[in-house]
Length: 127
Image 1 (cartoon, helix red, strand yellow):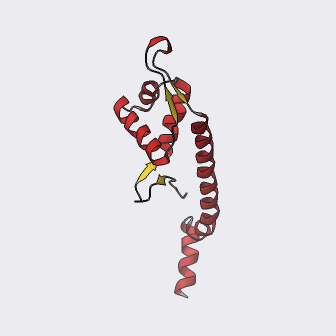
Image 2 (cartoon, rainbow, N blue to C red; image 1 turned 135 degrees about the vertical axis):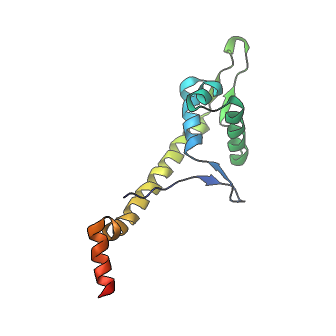
Image 3 (cartoon, rainbow, N blue to C red; image 1 turned 90 degrees about the vertical axis):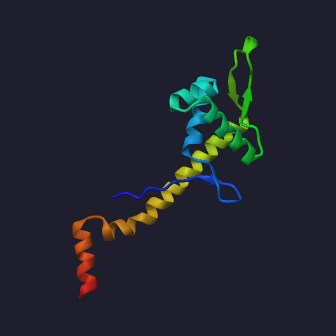
């Protein structure tokens, strides 16, 4: 048995706008050099990926991408230094929360982690 913790950022209305998928999309842009390439890697349409990225930038109030359209630049997209820092910090936050959740889960697992643990707990409460 494991505990599964989802870490997402939400706006003031409680609407989630950034989770593991956004991190994966940004990482893909860093690798592919384009929103289209990153979207394809994830099985997303370009339009959906663009909508997600625009929302994250709007909620953060910051630009995460530098978009070069056509011409000699051939429509590439680059992550801003802020985007790279955000990705590193958000990944760190996710690790910190998972570590804390794993620690908090240990007593629960000892009590309910398997048939022997549950039987022991049941005997105590029925005695």
